[in-house]
Amino acid sequence: MRQLQDLAAFVAVARAGGFREAAIGGSASASTLSDAVRRVEARLGVRLLHRTTRSVTPTEAGERLFERLAPALAEIDASLDSVNAFRDRPVGRLRLNVPSVAARLVLPWIVPRFHAAYPDIRVEVMVDESFVDLLAAGCDAGIRYGERLEQDMIAIPIGPARQRYAFAASPAYLAAHGRPSHPRELLGHACLEACFASGRSLEWEFEKAGEEIRLEPRGPLLLQVGGGADLMTDAAIGGMGIVGLFEDWLQPLFKQGRLEPVLEEWWPSFDGPFLYYSGRRYLPAPLRAFVDFVKSEPCARWPGPERPARTAHEN
Image 1 (cartoon, one colour):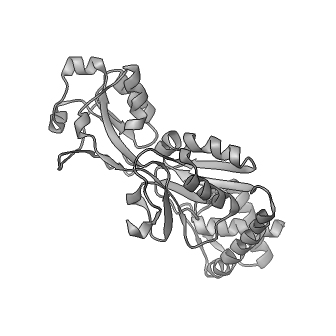
Image 2 (cartoon, one colour):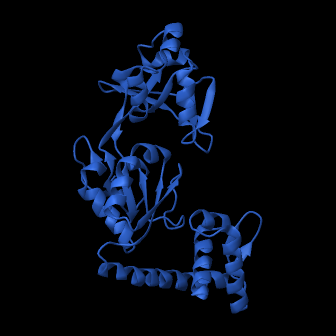
Image 3 (cartoon, helix red, strand yellow):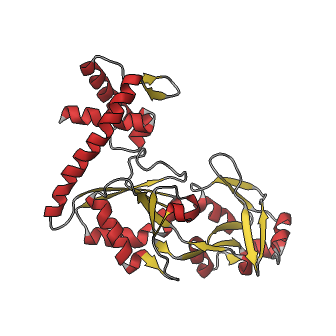
């Protein structure tokens, strides 16, 4: 068993391209993975990985071993998972890779009910704004929006069928600076900006009666997508400027009167998120249970027109 664990550690590191990256996608630390790979190399008497301060890549021997070992370990996992068919309820781990908006607006509706139905499945949620390789990250499935799905992925709708991107400001800000009546007037307002990890700014999009407008907001605050939504809303409540976020995120603040909708007739709508997973591998019992749950439970699909399941290459 120890040797299998060490071999699995080597496969994880080779697939992820680094010890730290493999640790993020698994349950072992980077140092534990490093020790495991050293034991494999010592037993085989050959170096399997080139290690530098910037990268970890397989040697020729490592590539050969990885090519044979990865499918063999996957088959072992599938064989062990087949025992779940003899249980009343599946057991195991379900690891999901999701953006922060899904962690806040989609999963709270679903995870407690799924746990009630399958109490022996441990759900692990990895919050990540980037579109990762699920297998390399050690995840079973992910949640993303349709335009960011990759080839060879199966996707089924999860969460709200339709969503809107909304804009808002505090009553104090609107009283002091006026309420914009057209998106282009935002160029003269303080706008709370967001950017991607790459540094690229997030554009604001508007649509009305077939007219589409795109703007790059400018203002006194810039936050990276995902990690700063709460600070963004707090800043807007404090009167720093106009904020753009998912409507579901802002709706409680509208009801409380802490923020007011801005340019509501221009808010763009779009398809809700999808649960996606690889169509090239067997479905572990926990993932199969989650997929069936999402397809059948009303709490996992609300409200709006029903959208059929589709594969990514049908986008």
